[in-house]
Amino acid sequence: MIFWVWIFGLIYAGLLVFASLKSYKKGRSSEEFMMAGGNIGLSLGVLTFAAALFSTFTFLGMPDFFRINGIGAWIFLAVSDGAMVFVLLWFGYEIRKKVRGMEFRGVSGLISRCYENKLAGYTFFLSAFLFLIPYVGIQIQGIAIFMDAAFPESLPAWGWSLGIVLIMLTYSEIGGLKAIIFSDAIQGVLLLAVIWIIGWACLDHFGGIGQMFEKVGSVKEELLSTPGPKGLLTPQFLLASLIAILMIPVTQPQFTTRIVVMKSMKTMKLMAVSLGAFAILVIIPTIFIGMYGADLYGEYSSQEFFAMAFLNDQHEAVAALAIIGLIAAGLSTTNAMIFAMGSELRGLLTGAENVIMKRTKIGIFVFSFIAFIFSIIVFDQLVLLARVSFAGTGIMGPMILLGILSDRKISPVMIYLSLTGLAIFLMSLPGIIPNMYFGIRLDLLLFIVLGISAIGIYLTSEKRIVTDLKVNE
Amino acid sequence: MKKNKLYWRICCIAAVFLCIITYTPLVIPQGAFKPMLGGIPYSLWTSFIITVLLVVLTYIGTRVHPGMQDEEDKL
Image 1 (cartoon, helix red, strand yellow):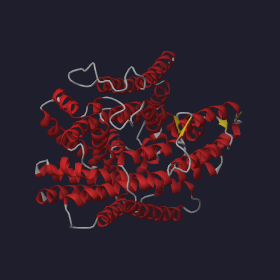
Image 2 (cartoon, helix red, strand yellow; image 1 turned 120 degrees about the horizontal axis):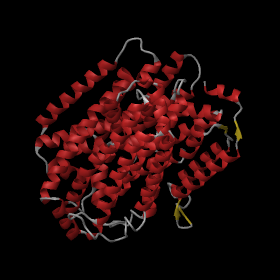
Image 3 (cartoon, rainbow over the protein chains, first blue to last red; image 1 turned 30 degrees about the vertical axis):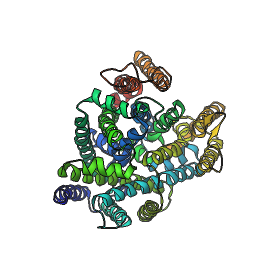
């Protein structure tokens, strides 16, 4: 296998270096570095959005989620993604309309301007920091664990993590957002190809789709229906997950940035449709891999299942491709998140442009370092941590939507409510306060309360007088 | 233009409707996996159709979204 890893690894590294050098331009402006010049076409747009969205969470996490919780995992992710692309179409139009004619400096900067209150930007930044950095950390850790399984005793897990962080930093420093978008495109194609090769091999083990479910049903019948063997996928859990995933284009800055940097409205809307098709294509083979795991490795730990299904049971070349595909998947998503955090920081800084850029780059380095520390100390299930990350940032959704959609002078009460919601959600994570009230999940309750509050605040706000519009110009 | 507004609203209502029925026993009857379609459990094939319909609705949305047509005209 090592031979194949070298072959595919060198091809992948060569493509990365090529993309990075192609994106490098001496004397480029900060706008070009941070926003790729705002000129991304359809193919790159679809692949970069897909690559940022479908990461190790999809590659490893979803097969494992299907294996443990059964077919309801489709509703958890695929139905939610189908609805999310519809929201993307609607929200993409609204945010592009809002930022037209002004320099987009991240959601934090935009939302500060919408509320005419810097606290709004800081609140958003805080939620992104709290929920994206641990997610980045666990993705890095996922790759490190996988590498450790592939090459035992070659490097400690933290050594792999450090290597990934260093590649990520070097790469983004040389090429900026454009290089990240190019690497996303490579990863998107690679992810789709590898997941289908492995998925097809897993389906082949059963001899067909009907036989697959028949066999899995004989092993554990609960896998064929909701809420699944562990009782996790209840209607309420799935509904709260839907809302959290719907909010991804609104509240996760790496996606919002990608919507804004698309070349035109036309490419943005075609990107939304293509992304929906891409989501279906990527998630289907994860069912096959998950059902294969349920049949053969139902009682194994996640790590053992990954090692068996992705490495040991595959042809050496396919296993090597899986390793490179996983590195690519993790690298592009973590890169996109860390860079987006830098972009958000830039939106909150004031002063001379070169000083802001310098501080932004220092910020990217600091975020990477914190993510590296998290990758060493945090242990959790990939999908469930991703779910917490989506829900945590999703709490900011009503505040951002109100800011972007409203043509009125908005009361800062919405900011205070969002901060309170964030604090309550954070307290529920370690169990300081319960996560169920009146039989309703806390995250769902927070979405409902904040959503209703946003509508109430909008209805009671004063209409803006014309001169106020200059704030956005 | 007026027609587009109406079609866009219909798309939005249809999308919300599809999302809502997904979380009812119509699509996810607890603990039931029959009737199967081509050997695929009930909740999986119904929710697969819903996913495809949502993407189709998004496509229709790109054609009828009233604001977007304005934008293209301006360009």
